[in-house]
Figure (cartoon, rainbow, N blue to C red):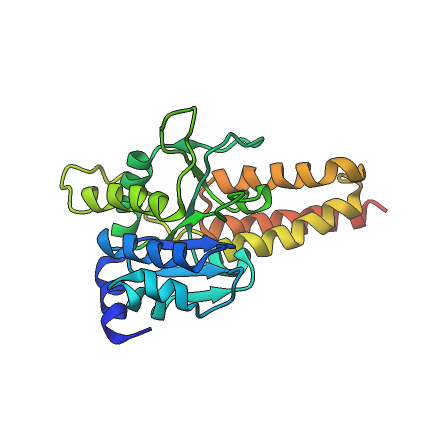
Length: 254
């Protein structure tokens, strides 16, 4: 990451824009241009279809090339969100899971509040053709739906980045925002993933996930329960202790 971009990232501490499985370099470049318009400087790219770097993306960036030069590339989404404490996922359709659904103004307000107290936040944008998969959406704390014409509500990748980025840009310096965010050290996505990596195998051994066809949905539901809770690192550590205590009780009962 160049010194100039690093300085801007540190100074503005805006949310990370995460493009998940983007297909066309032109769309990545246009998204970078939209980010720079809105004072967003940190891009992460997950499994780009045409590889990286991408000449078409650079050509389309039109002045925002530094965003692309500083972009981080990941093979999978879990790695891309591991250090983040709050993630919003964009979606144009309803999902079969219980998650808060907000519009671009509401998520922008929360992002401004969270980043102002040091929370590391991210915004997920899915592939152009199909959007985000359910297994990707489950990693998010909230879903973002921009209210548009229901007859045609799909957005180009860069359009989606621009709409949500502009809402954040407008509110960033608004002095009337309520500071209602928790100040505790929120758990990162990696902290939660480590807990799930321990919990799910234990549930499999106990027989709780014995019905194979129901297992994926049950695991998503379990993940969503903990995602909604906005857990701190201390609370996740307590959950680890609870699981360990229950395992000891099970062993002593044999």
